[in-house]
Length: 366
Image (cartoon, rainbow, N blue to C red; front, side):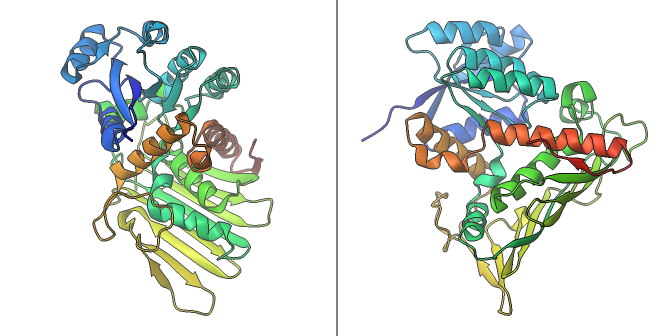
């Protein structure tokens, strides 16, 4: 039986925006959502023009949109927030207060205060909050998580996550670069933009959150007022050790996200640039290359050997979110939510505090 799509709205993501277009494609890929309304820009003229291109109901601002849509019989049931970091909290709070499910791009917010506002609104709302850490929805990442959970590696000893880019290795001016290197809008630089991805990926696969960290944050481009390189040592309450290296000044690196997990009985290695393969290395046995042919999560839409990637990760999340909104709680544990967002903010706060004190070990608030 065909299911009626969930009515979706969008805040941000107007003409020329990168991540808004990604969310729109992903939301419609499996037919679970239909985009019907938007406050696509803080500029009313641009918002109206962008909405007209997409055939949407247009609003000048998100407050107006939350009030009007919640009052309509055919109003939106969920909203995607695809704005810069400092503009996540206010629309998230407005829509949660209106009882509308929120799908928010990462990280959760630009400041701890903003994160707290979202948490308070979510606690008193009947609606759900979802965070789009898309890489954790890739099939072989979910397979890695299943292998760790069933004990294939034994007790975890070491965890190493990296996310390396080179696109900000010199002073740059573009829509994407400008807000990401502005502390008022981003909150944190490479640490918040891509370090939170590495943090969530390691947390998702291992099921463990570090208890303490020591961080060295750098601004390697002269005059840049925000970190562009983050090196973080991690300690886990289980006794495991780990590390995160997130950099946007690693010349030659395009999107080098990777994860290595080492246990008593074996190890796992996964890289985004070869995302269809997961390397499992049992102790004292030949390494095994696992592909989607062995994946048990069914998080794919083409036969193994037909590569899937970035868009499909977002689409997997939207498909799971649609199922959760309709009442399927079995998928909830694999979709990042408020807890993942707050954990990412805890990483940022602890790393900034540690770096400000010459790498002192700092407890990660959870």
